Image (tube, rainbow, N blue to C red; front, side):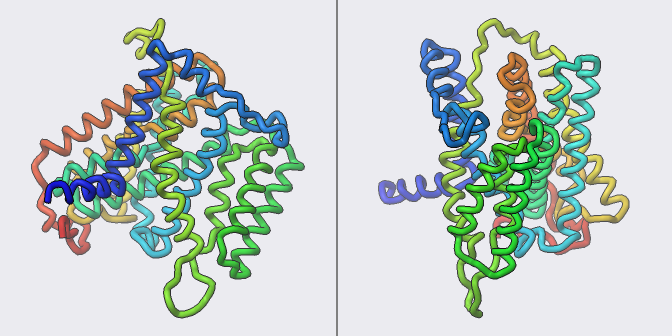
Length: 409
């Protein structure tokens, strides 16, 4: 019986959030270990392997790491948009009141870390571009932690945190689009607008097969590559226009959104994100020492994640509740909310992504990654300890006036 149940354990692992987070973490650790081992030269050769495509011109990715960051990560941003579209259409964000609280928390959780970083690094103009590094929460790591806490975090609170993390990612995408592009090229930008208009027309006309949108997404990626905006925005724009309704008929059918999410979900979880972690987490500690964490750049990132993030999320969320704009998630006390706000300081995927854009080919990116890793680990430990050892909340209490969450049922 034990032998028969073993494949079930494997299946559950590969379909659970903890499984995806575990593979991402292992891939990132592997990259870090290789970069600090006798195989460091081989690791650098692998991540800088020439992969230029002449048709794309000088703007195209020219290394293996470049293709992961500028190419494959487009699929990650596409899945983020598909996830939030699904929740808005038929899920936990289907009303404006459900959207309000995590969105407000995400905005506060973006502004406060950016301000914290700017205050810490004031007077250092050469690292001012890193202000957006601590603004995003990595759902890949926060979700397994709160699931492991079981009934200490209500279902409604888990939904709130996941929605906030998704909005964080969307805000991060907007920041990348607005602040981390290069000089704009209007010819390519016009092509971007034309392709986006074609995608919109296909959506409006009821075209409900995936391949036309996939083809449009590829052309959009190429146009964005030459426009001065970041090419991963192709995933965002394509996802916005991907139909969420079947082509007709009263029977519920798989929609282009469903099909794309079902195909890309495992690809992103088990391929794209681990590759990104492996390619970007590997940096050499040669010549580094612990005191360097107190330099303005890593310190600004750490304090942004450890202080700015929870203060921004918790403060704006409680303000929204006090102003009766929204209500706390059912079965969630203010103490639980604060613990969840601490976990919001786990910044990894988007933080590393932005650090590469803020400090391309620079020694600063290594200091930035030191700050990201240190701040994220401390945020994860402090949030887990807070939620693990505080009194278990009684989910029968309804601070929001909504029906109580039914955990474990």
